[in-house]
Image (cartoon, rainbow, N blue to C red):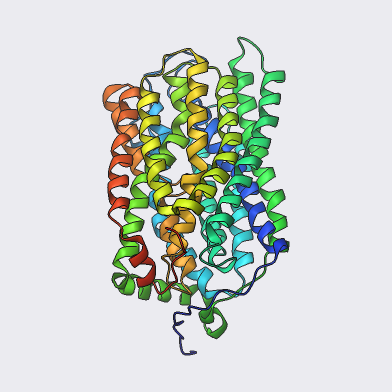
Length: 463
């Protein structure tokens, strides 16, 4: 077996990336955001909740349902089925994503990994076409495959970021990627809004359910089609470990992950930042994931109102990501993320007080979310890239992705438990405040410049 070579820290900047290569990287955000927006944020929560309610014996279109389903013999309230699925998917990704990251670092063919994960997730999303009637178990299984594959692809995708620009360029690169992603997700959602508006029928809940299912399928097609562009435009930039390896990339990846887990204590400040991110981003992802369920079940808003609100979020998030990216160039990414968490706390308080059956206040709150959403996520991603030891981008982004882009688990778990105990979505929403408050305090305690230096990297001029 060939000797394993551990890459050394290299302070030299990465080879200059081309505009075409960076554009290819941006376009993958355009591709995968269709899944995040159309599937996770808008349609899947209400869709799977309705399918679970049908399986629980509730009438389609009923205002409320107190029934239960029994996946694997476990008694679950139909309204809690989807939040529990999210938590289960994240529990599984805890084991999958760090391994995917380690394999990506050891592979000279990261684009193949990106394509394999993306096409698997897109295929599972397209297969939602077969989730009809009361097939809530099939829908849950396909969601698990799609969401885990989505996270795996994002791990590989994010690992390209440190290779596309130096310390002072990454905030801008990351912000442009997020911005284009929100724009792409918004375009597909707009098309689905037109379809739902034109094809829905009053007093026909089955038609509404069918339109939701085909909207989910459309996101899988979009995701797969646009993934072809980054697979062609991105360049392979193998690490020293990938070039030197002589064994099997899968077994080498597991071995490397084991070494990293043993050595990670050498970077305690990176771990502290990661802990802060896992806490506050869990709150962000829970708001995104369960917003449509909150709107339909608690506020009793129509599906078209929800889609318009999410569209508003998407297009404002495009500008918000670029605006907060510009603010980060003036005051630093760390301070900008802290500011965004203060704003998120205000969002939760505002959501708790929203009146039922009134779409305008819900849309106003959606506008506020859009202004802070993209920037808080994009800048967290670029800030974390400064804290990763050279050559281990995939592994560390594997840990990072456990709470990114739809893979939060504590928030949905808390939300689901509170709903099961109180039957109130509003009370469940209040439980999310702790994620933003604690996350803010943890991030505030990170000595960010010292953390970057400790990881062997050069800090940007402004933090």
